Image 1 (cartoon, rainbow over the protein chains, first blue to last red):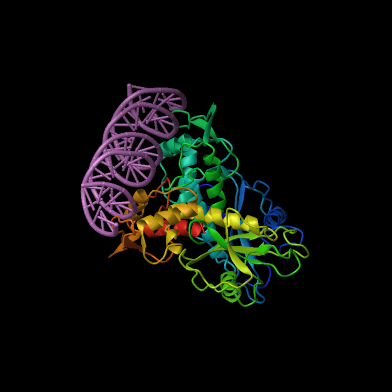
Image 2 (tube, protein in one colour):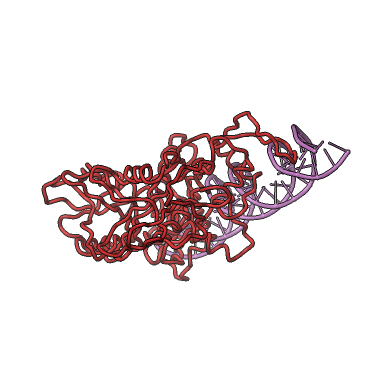
Length: 227
Length: 227
DNA sequence: ACAAAAGTGTTTATTCTACACCCATGC
DNA sequence: GCATGGGTGTAGAATAAACACTTTTGT
């Protein structure tokens, strides 16, 4: 994901089924690793990405005819890197805007779109923004980031308030230099946590609030739930 | 799921790895079916459940040592039946409360707990209650159902209002007879839809609301997203 | 008439949006 | 000083929790 639009890293297939089309990085599961270990290994090997800030299971794609030949069951993942990192990627890979994908191999377009939708949903009720943001950022940069990811404008004013109220933003005390056109220098913030947490656990039917010990259970509940 | 507590259908293993322990129904994926077709077939074959009102992927469990011997990758599902159906189940299967499971085989307890948490979360921001409720029901019965599923009391008064405001409840016009102790007869309701829909799409950062055509995208977005 | 259960009205609290206004900087 | 962007104050809307009150039944 980079700049002003959600992007996905694809690589151009050199082998015969669907030569030349773009496909998601991945590969076979080894007998001694679980699926998450596997996808992290695949990414580290095939494309140079160590900066993964978030990885989560998306869904299993298992249509018998999703690839030519014997059926292959795929476990799809959503993996995120901060928008400001531009990892060295091999020759045959490139970032593509998820809203205008090139010709993809197999069912990979459907997978990408599922991942996009999952990301957009989670941005609204988790702190998942941390995975896309640099370590330090201005509110307006963050607003641009959310706007790009969600596909519609998110007001910096309200973003600040909502994320602050939820205790997700920590002011660093520093400020960014103002641009050449002037303007007040922007304060720099970081996200308070580096792992995903659910910030809006229950839309309705909240468990009885007085008890403070219930809160942890609540949090755990949706966090698992919405995997 | 039955009566006043969430229940899960387990069957007692007759074969050697973990003989006598309780395990989730399931089995091998055939080469000509996808995972959802497979789980529906397994359930139809092994235990007599045709009344599944909702089925969704939960997660892949793939730890190399989750079962003895060669590694088996499992795709876990959440499947729901209305609380008022009591399907004919074979001798070696039984319903167990999810909050006090018997000794389970392999990692099946973890799977059940994940499913429970997913269900609880989705009850709060989707219409998933339809999958647990009978075709017609009173508000207080529904309240009992939500209370049992969520594990804490849900007020019938507010449940009525929230679900009505969201357009999920349809009054049937009929009323249920009042109990022997008297009391006003309760009105009967049904759920408006028989498929899962997200009713509280975005917690924050709502897309610009005026445009009516955006709503469908919004809805689709989270519905996919939170699968 | 009275108890019991269902349903409605009303108040309050919380949370987000919208928009006006103030602040700090470069030119 | 003034344009430019950043930040805050405040009012309004929406939603839901809590609780009192009314309605409809059986005995």
